[in-house]
Amino acid sequence: MKAKKVLSVLLTTAMLCTALAGCGSAAGTDTSAGQTSDNAQEASAGTENAAAGSSEDLYTVTIYAPYEASTEACAEVSEKVSEITRDLINCNVELVRGVTSEQLNLALTSGEKLDLFYAFPWEVTLSSMVASNEIVAMDDLLAQYAPDMQSSISEDDWACTTVNGSIYGVPMNKDKAQARGFEMNKAIADELGIDYSKPITFEELEVALQKVKEAYPDMYPCVPNGGSMNFPTWSADVMSDSLGVLENCLEDSTQVVNLYETESFKEYCDMMYRWVQEGLMMPDGANTDESYATYISSGVGFGTFTPIKAGFEAEETRKCGVEMAAVELYAAHSTTSMVNACWAIAGNSEQPDKAMQMLNLMYTNSDVANLLINGIEGKNYKIVDESNKIINYADGIDSSTTDYSVVGWAWPNEQITYVWEGDDADVWNQLGEFNASAHSSPAKGFLFNNENVLNEVTACNNIVAKYQNGLITGCLNPDEAIPEMTQELKAAGIDTIIAEKQAQFDAWLAEK
Image (cartoon, rainbow, N blue to C red; front, side):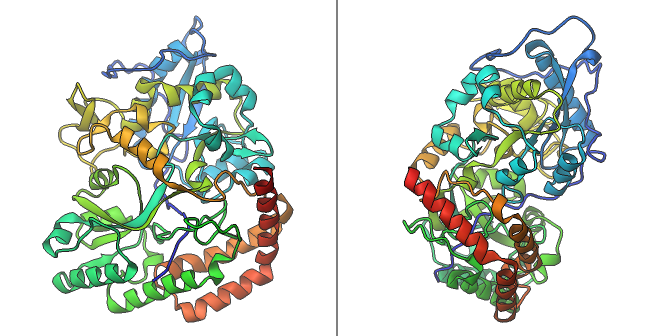
């Protein structure tokens, strides 16, 4: 089967810390962060010494981040980070976690107090946020307050967050490439003789899942993720918004096509629909709320489709609570959308200069990065190997009971933080090599500017939202739903979007 997919890492929807405002700093906390720092720098260019006076007089940088954390944990981490930032850049920090794309959009459009946030590039494009003045151009701020961070990021990566000649986001130092595959419960895979040591085809994967169904009839071999899938499994370049894609960026074609009219999309949806009928895929997946990790950890599910990177299995083992293995379907490749998942300064920020200083610390200061990513030593994690800086959950807690979830890739620079037990000690070097060896899409660095087709984009996105999750989870009959979807997309102007994207892409290619 030649099914290929587009990128859409679906973040787990979580409760916001007391309605987007409850994770403020807890002044007066007296505990020590207890962290061992190997900072490349203690204070980067543009930082200031703390002014005399109480901390309440200082500006508070408000940070919105995804994934779950309790109000108490947010407050404790906020205070620990503030103890550092008051000395280095003269500000306090308020951390808000559990933020979804919908909640972020509400904050940006309502004018709510906000300084730094994790952008959701698969939900909203940088170009659209620029057009609506929701984010701040960074060029001058980077030069003045973050020259070290600026110089450590490649020009190719900066190009992925550049709109109309200006930088609007800091690319995260994470996996900047991804393979496509299927992750599974390793113990069951080993028991059934499922070989995950080399790439497989969709047909071979289906045979493996049939073995699982026969051996464990009460388990779903494939499960969804929060009403969708960790879609895609194939090697398309979504070119910002999936409304016009390069169908296979492992090849050199620069022809922009309608994903939903491709044979590969139809074949994939046919497969998922058949899997539901045969019991290989959880039924009614589009109407579920739980994450794939919950299904797998509870024994309801065996596995799910996933992007793959270096160190992936150990990370997923911590998340799912059982040892995980992954098998590759499509080779590693790098696209703009894999790089421009970034951190941005909100247009609502009252002090963008202070926000940039804070973002610089988040990227370059290991104490700050460890606190924001891993929480507090002794409460959220413990050091198990001081010499190799390896950590694990604190005594008495695990991934299912911690009040501060660890999702390093969603922060500016996980590669200056501790390594979690189970990962190789040199996992960050491995990740760098993985990024460097991946195939680059012909469109890597291209950002679509949708200003000329905003009405068409809005209309088409509404149609995609109507059909896509149902199709990719096997809930809708592709023979009926895909023709309806494509007809509605054409009426809404997808061909106009594709023509505009192709023209911009051709001009971009000509300038390279």
